[in-house]
Structures are given as C-alpha cells and as structure tokens.
Length: 224
Ligand code: CDP
Image (cartoon, rainbow, N blue to C red; front, side, top):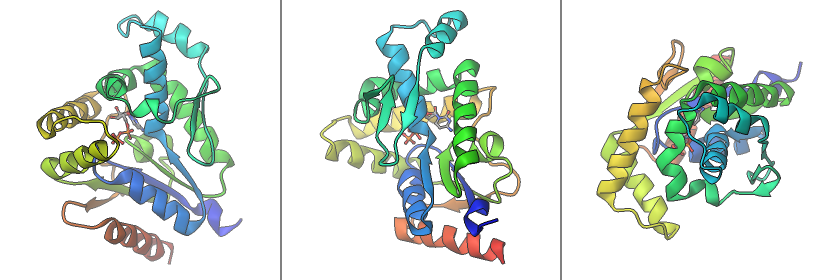
C-alpha cells in the first residue's frame, strides 16, 4: 500500500472559514487530489434554478437529478451536463438557493455517492465540505473542522466577492452567511457538525499559511 492511499483528509466547516484555500494548498503540498464538494452542490443548485424546479416537489427534483451530470476536472473546472459552469456557480442567484438545495435528501444521496466514488479511486485526497468527516469519508484518518468568528468570515467573503466585481454589501454578506450556516447546521440529513475525533482549528486570527502548517503538523503527528 502506498503512503498516499492513507492520505484521506476531511476538512469541514462553515462558509468563510478558509476551507477552500487551505484544502487546495494542503493537497498541492501533499501532491494529492483536491475536491471541493460545495462546487458540486452549487452545480446542482444552478441546474434546478435554470429548470425553475419546485424544491418542495421531491418527485420533480428526482426527475431532474436523473438527467443531470456534474463533473469536476483536475484543474477544478466544473461541468454541468458537459457545460463549463465554473464561474456561474458562484453567482448571487446560486448563493441564495444552494443551502436549500443541499438539504434535499435526494440531492445529498447523489452527491455523496459520487464523492465516495472519487475518494475510492484516488490514491490520496483532500476533500472539503460540510459532511465529509461525518458521512462521505467517516473512515478518513485525518479530520479537521475549520471555524472563525462570523464577522471575520463575512469580511473574508465580502472581500472575495468585491475582488470578483460582485458587489454585495458587508451587511448583506453577514446575513447570507448566517442564513446558510443556520440551514446547513439545522438540516436533518448530515448537518454541519463537529464529529468525534476531529481537530478543530479556529482560523479567526490565523493566516492561511498558519492553518496549512497546523494541518500538515497534525497529519505528521497522527501518522507517527
Ligand atoms: O465556499 P462556501 O463556504 O461559500 O460554500 P461551499 O463550500 O461552496 O458550499 C455551498 C453550500 O453547499 C453550503 O452552504 C452547503 O449548503 C452545501 N454543501 C453541503 O451541504 N455539503 C457539502 N459537503 C458541501 C457543501
């Protein structure tokens, strides 16, 4: 067994906790696959938005899901039914509905199955999301939960959006993040939570590099 086959790293946490940047960098340093599972939920949300699908009708949602494919390429581009939607999944419209879509059991079943298939064929993987340690890779030897104070998370997201030219006021960003946290933590099916055996890192006052270092150190210590 190669050393990389044990390198299953789960990183969970709320919006703006720094998960994506940190997870991508940890994967790069370890030379393993990086998977942003949030991007997959965003792609499904985009599809259901485009089809004006009524989310309160499970039958309609399932019919749409049967005809939908989501692919994540090695360069992180994301394809929805073959179309590159990498930028569109970050739109305000998707931000507004993604947590409502992600709480639907049929959506979670499809996404979790696909994520587990990707983990099974990857020699090593850093997977980030909300339910990775609890549901997608409960057997991962390395599990981390990133968190930060709400105003700090909102500020990070606000600056990111501003740099992309997508203006949303700081106050609205706080509201939206808070609302998504509430739905993500409160849903019945695999909510965002800290599972036993997970190392919690509060990133409020830490730089990306400091968080990456803590994770790499955590992996070394646990692997010894
Ligand atoms: O990057 P950001 O924190 O804004 O969120 P994301 O990782 O792109 O995820 C978008 C949304 O997808 C989350 O707010 C959750 O509702 C959902 N999600 C989920 O339910 N389970 C996951 N494993 C990943 C994302």
